[in-house]
Length: 73
Image (tube, rainbow, N blue to C red; front, side):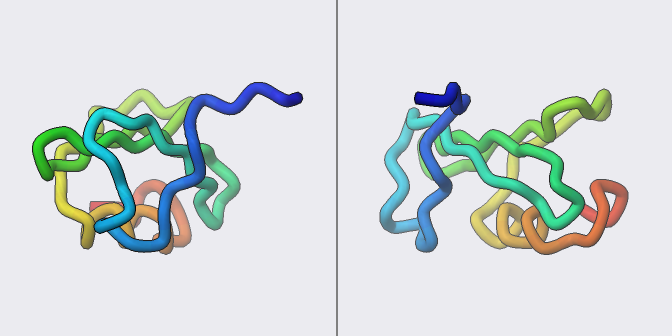
């Protein structure tokens, strides 16, 4: 079984659990981890040096659809 640093990110925010670590792949093939705590989302683009998250579910969706990391909120 391959190592993954989190569960797949759910399609809807209502299906996410606080404190759970989620993983998604961006269009530029970078991996992003997400965690929701008390309704606020925190993320990190793996292999990126810039600071990341907190934000909303809408921010999460923009991060996942932006063509490059520079285009994310």
